Image 1 (tube, rainbow, N blue to C red):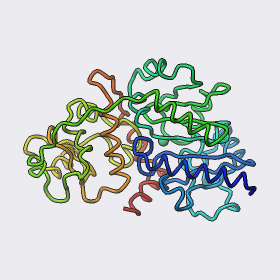
Image 2: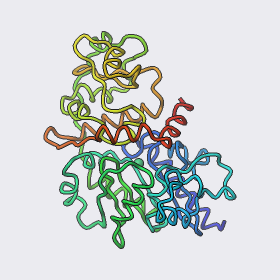
Image 3: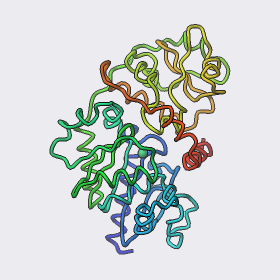
Image 4: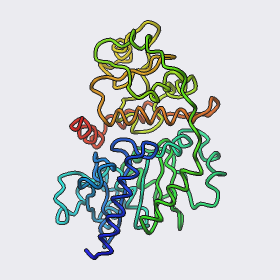
Length: 346
Ligand SMILES: [Zn+2]
């Protein structure tokens, strides 16, 4: 590796760590980053955290030509891309990101995929394309309707790319930006976030007495006051009750939102929803309760739900994932693998 190559890799990892520590950009093990060089694409490993990019190895080398040929041929190996890892270049015993194909189909050297809260607050609306047109005017952007992450999302993005497209809004999911340098990609990400920024509403007061009453065994009052807005802010609560707004919500918190009824305990509410225990239970008007087994990934996604819903207005046409789309995420081996890594570090 030349000195310039090393500098570029350091810049990439520093960017990954900086973005990974910003909960408005990345939550938990979500999002990913890649760099293409000499026929190899270094992409984030599944289940690793961008926030840790400068502390441990998070990048896995994959053979770009093999991924693209597999996608063109409909090879099922593209679902995980594990078969395309250049094990001769890395001893990291992990799989590449489930979003590897998304990076491979973008022609630019550097690709950054983030679950940017500002972007998601538009991408979860049924009229996202119309709403994005004015703020993104002048950028080379495209919108890709929701499709489960994995090979089919990679193919769908490839179908939507025109020459020079470097901003992709993923419906009910997030943002992809690309550039020929780390700096260029990051500047573009910052620009898109800036253009889509909406300030979140301040949250009403938490009702701790009501939360104590609903707590029961295994649940505690969430320590971060911002999280309670999911249940105390009527607009946020109504949006969250519509369903799951993006894939990582389903993967780390389970589908939808469990809410208590008057006088009901959190554990009974979970059972009424057909689930033994859930990381998050909302007590309408009072605040949110957290299960003691909530993983770091789940906690990050609770904050995300508060941040996204606080940016929505009452008449925003929220369009959640369908029950079939939720089931697809939960039954998927690649996501079970990512969940298992989250559980291991909790
Ligand atoms: Zn994603």
